[in-house]
Image 1 (tube, rainbow, N blue to C red):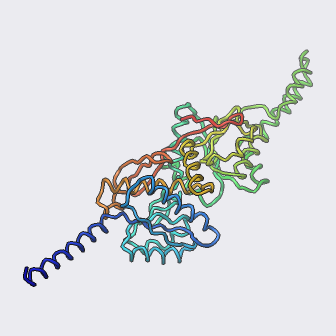
Image 2: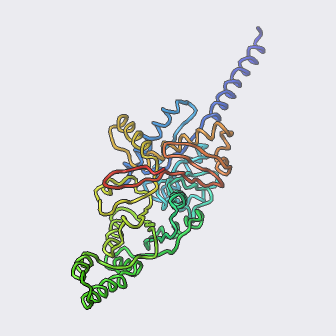
Image 3: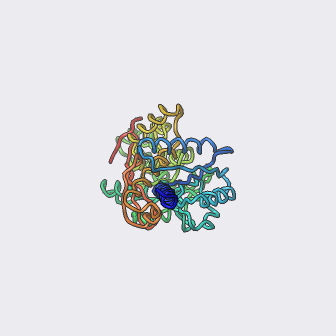
Length: 384
């Protein structure tokens, strides 16, 4: 073989290697990960990395590559890390974790961010909220209300930074509410507001008036009747049959305590709240039961927690399950779309079943189909 043909053959061979390498690189699913790896929230970030590794292991594909970058829980650092990911040829990113870190991401137009936030208002155009938002929760509550033929629901909403999200969720879910009230979390103000909402002073006065009437009557059984009335706090019903409380943790318990004080009991009215992530302390609050709420699938969550603990020796935070599912979601979309076009797939109506439940994707938005649970007599029961 003369030197010219040897040179030609080697040139073609090297060119083929380059083409094959480039094709292999293009066929890779490169996922950026914007998470706190330093600072006070570093444990959250490290567990998210562990969850993504677990997802890749379970998917069992060598096509997925994860590129973690530190946000330091700071919007400026988040932007710098996003720019670095863009320079690495990445166009799809899981993260950031916190809503505040989305501030400058509209400056990185070529990247699509699937954020962990559950807020949906005022997001940059290239950010998709993947958290369990108010619309997802209210869609589930609406289903419960309709199945149980609940007619008059009042909505109690705290005066906090997510009240506009609740209003948006009410609008999008088209849930029917009788009245909406906004309350203050300060205990004294809260109790006074709940008294007004439940018409407590009138109902209490009704009781006192009835006792006085019996005392002045000639009813032969008045002493027995008075004794029975003295066991009560009020007379008269409230003008609703369920209460949806958009609150969590100790603040939720304060609202329920105020309702109990005003003689409104979960034994008589439905007490419905937002996703509580199976807060075990609610199991011990028997006076607050039964209490209802939407949530991710409990069985799937428990199985994932056990698997995560066996693999890494720590109990996972709530975001790990979402991290795991988002890797699976991206892989699922890659099977149906060109790898370079995955980010555009979020505009197309589709559904994906993950550990959390079903993801409904449409118009660059993610909603979740949730389960619905009841806590009664210290036990958790799945309604649907």
